[in-house]
Length: 167
Image (cartoon, rainbow, N blue to C red; front, side, top):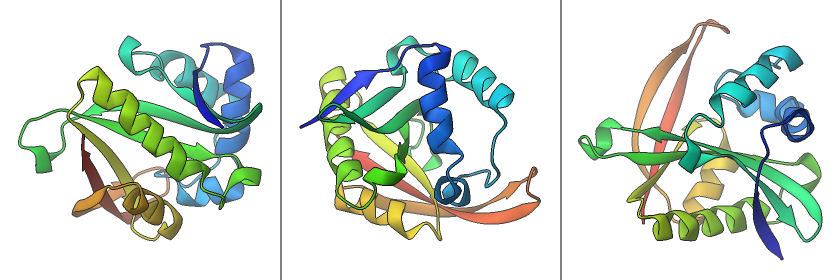
């Protein structure tokens, strides 16, 4: 059974999320496709991931086993003409990939945010990240636009596909 459990703003929970963030497959699929240092990650985790009290990150548990991590941000994508969406950024534990955990987690998140009154969920995905694109499409998200972003840290231009889901 899949459950979502609110993360704590502490080093223990941050270390779990950090270990998954620096997995090579996650790094390759990330917006900034570089590993993060612990100090940088923990500062971002503690100061940014909990900045909006209504959007604290969650762990995905498959039974008693931690299977993933999701963080959130409010966003105003141009596709929504000024309306606010909740952007979700999901990271599945390497040993739990490919078995439907991500799709089930996104379904649970849709229910959670629908009950909170949110109107849309959003996911920005690198165009070449076929696994994430398939996950969001399977979960009922639809492509809503594409853009090119310049990532200064890697000095690359990357294509981003914006996925939206009306709740």
